[in-house]
Amino acid sequence: MRNFRIHISILVLILSIGTANAQFVNKGKIITISDGSVVTIKADASNEGAIRNAGTVYLSGDWTNLNSYLSQNGKFVLNGTSVQTIDHNESTFYILELDGGGRKVFTSGAAVINELILISGIAEIAATKTFLLREDATVTGGSDNSYIEGQMFF
Image (cartoon, rainbow, N blue to C red; front, top):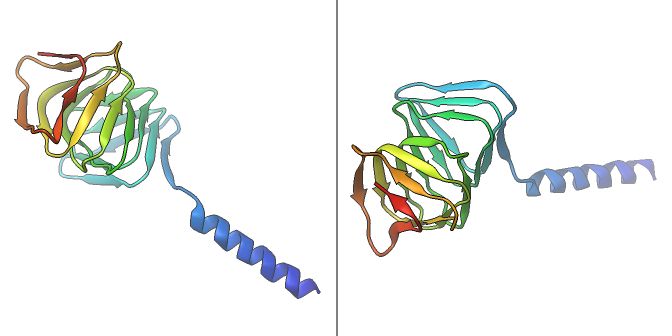
C-alpha cells in the first residue's frame, strides 16, 4: 500500500510541473543586457529592479515594469501571437518592434526614442495614456495589420 501512494504523489508532481507557466521576475536586481546580446522570454515578465538594455529582448508574454528600464541603445520586441498587456511605467524604448500579430495593450504611456518598427500587431494605447515618438524617431513598416491605436504624439 505504501508504494502505491508514492507513485501517485510522483505522478501528481509531474502533472503539476508540466502545466505550470514559467515567468521572468526581476526582484530588485540590476540586469545588464550587453550590446549584441539577445534575451528571449517566452512568458510573462516583471521588472522590480533595473534593466539596462543595449542588446535585444524578445518578449511573447505580458510586461510589467515596476521600477527602472533603461533602454540605452537596445531593442525591445513584442512578438506575442495573442494579447500582450504592457505596463512600461511611462518609460522609454530606444527601438520598439511590434511583431507576432497579437494586440499589444499598453496600460501605461510609453515613448520611443529612436525607431518604431511595425511588422505585425496592433498597439492599443489606454484612453488616458499617450504614446510618444521623440523628435528624431523614425517609423518603419506599418499596415492594416500593424499600427498604433490611441493617442500618439510626435
